[in-house]
Image 1: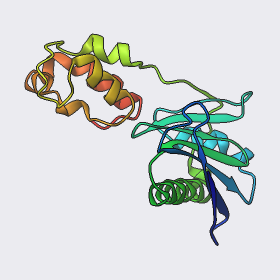
Image 2 (image 1 turned 180 degrees about the horizontal axis):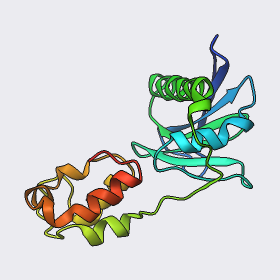
Image 3 (image 1 turned 180 degrees about the vertical axis):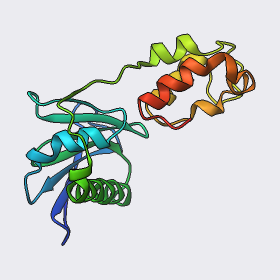
Image 4 (image 1 turned 90 degrees about the horizontal axis):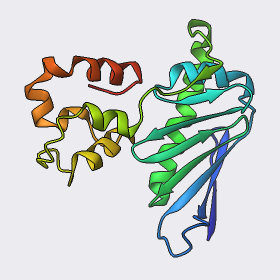
Length: 181
């Protein structure tokens, strides 16, 4: 299934089936830009917390609430959306981010190489590892993965919050990587 939507805002998008999951009810989004943003990529990399970017690759990658977002000079891809409305919201939000960076790029220091310094295992190693499930996840590993994908806040871990002074380094590293703490 492919469904294309044209907008008056400088982009159009289409929902496509997830090739590796032919029976999935979810879709990937391809958002075509009317103008190239190649020169903006280093500024977007500076403005998007937790992204990875190298100028040679010409693509920015990041996680946003469990969706993998890839930003190329002429298009964006967004994985695993469930509805047309969700796709529309992500496209609108990212187009607005692009426009905001375009307007404010004089105030941004461009970044030509950026890699997140945290992995799900790094987050897990820093957790209390009680598997108490107070966060709503079945295990600390599942919780660490959800935090990494930006689907959960680290503050949902009650033992960690209760002993916050013992986890200052984790909070600092999460903040450095653009996570809300």
